[in-house]
Amino acid sequence: MTLYGSTRHESIPIPQGADLNMYCGQACTRQDWCKLWCADSSSDTPCILSNIVVMPSYNELNTADALTCYTSRPKDHATNAVITAGQQVIEKPLMVKENLVDGIYSYYKDERFSTRKSASDKWFVLDFGRNVSFQHVVLYAQEGNNAVYQFRDVEVRVGNVEVTTPPSGFTDYVLFGFFQGRASPGQVVDLWSPNLVWARFVSVQMLRDNGYGFQLGHVEVF
Image (cartoon, rainbow, N blue to C red; front, top):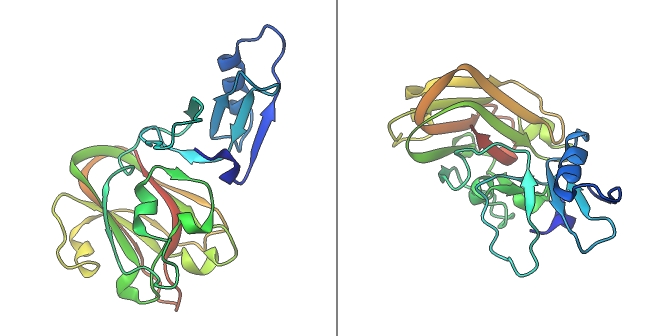
């Protein structure tokens, strides 16, 4: 993975005689922004701390110079789920729906998903392939000032049968949570249920018809 792609990372030394893995892990937990740490024994500053979001099920394909890294994020169902969505913005060809389920987010704008402005396009659905249990649906708003327009009045619903007429058919699902917003830049919205929820499908829709598309950077379900 490319650590320099994250918004923030630091390399730090360790005391002589300290256990490398244990020291690096403890150093990460002491930083509110740290979500990932790696140990590079070949470096004078062998602890690499980063705020890059990497899910446990993420599959790194470029392993030629890869380090062993550890993430603070929980194992989730969204990573590698089948995703369908409204039409993306044509002018932003890299901001595809698959970015939401690839298991990694470095806060780059091209790693987000962005829909068209039409109310009928501001949605996506995750299909886990079977009923799974979860309590949290976590949504990462985009970086930048447009988050206040492109991430608000967001409704999350869950169900066990595929909706054939999205987004109007989402009303057949059970309401899981609602975020009114407006979101602040980079805000992480954790919608949660006090009880375990069992479902195969999760729909996420921006209800506000304000002339802006729906844009977000990352999603987790656990």
